[in-house]
Image (cartoon, rainbow, N blue to C red; front, side):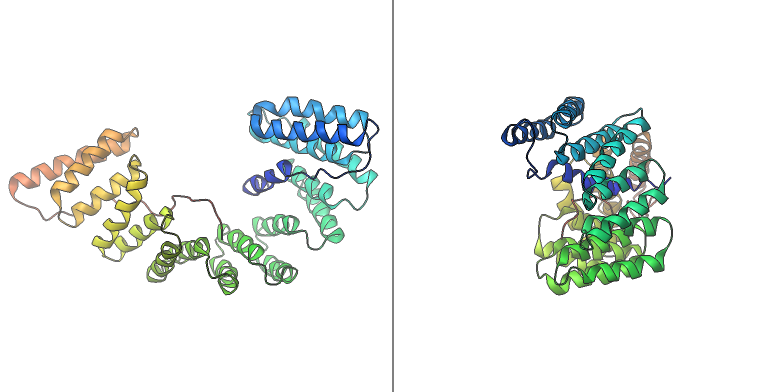
Length: 356
């Protein structure tokens, strides 16, 4: 099933940032604007639990002001939110959303946003042909519709059309000259598809346009790390931290890269920084304990294994900590402090929000 779920959450913001400029409505423009704005604000505040109430307001606005297209769009968005956050996954909600969007495109043939949102709903209904048809219509109406280009690029990569995806991304980038944001988006999409070289091409394009881009350096570090080019990964993680010392994910990843290149002192340094921010992260306590063992700092290793055992809810971590503690006590009693790592440290992946 082509769900493109990660992309869906990028577009949630479109619902909350819906335009409030629309044509005159039968019950008075100001009254319609006020009710609509209040419903949007309330839904933002209440989240999932407020969807049904918001839907009721949007549908009432549609009934009383049938030419108010924003209400149709927001109703469709609310149905999609209802579908995504409900365990029942009722496809009828998506079909209801499509019905509202069909009305939009009947009333306004060049409404690119409505076609784009149709595409998202069709992807969720596992109807990729209809989805692609609608996203292409949206792009024909508005070639600079970045969200539609992102959606179609994700579709191409999800269906393993890599060469077509590269050509499409290159053409798309030309619509946004000297704008780093689309390049970052394209890089992220290629990276998630494990097309690391293509991702880095776009990330490097960002760096040519933006001097202060810590999240792009972080992304480049991840791509090099995934290719096992650890020295290059270290270079970009270090630059990311230089630009933003609070980019803790870079500290975590640096620790992994340094540990794999036998620079244990540096690995411990960066993992301690990360641990200072997230003191209850059991995977970090586990990794610190392993690094202390590897460096021969037995007392610190024992202390860290005790913390791991205390904080761990997962039985695997508890048993590992107990085994290492027993082994360290046994070795200390024998006077054998030549420790050896018995587990791999965790790799990567303590996520900060993706930004430039």
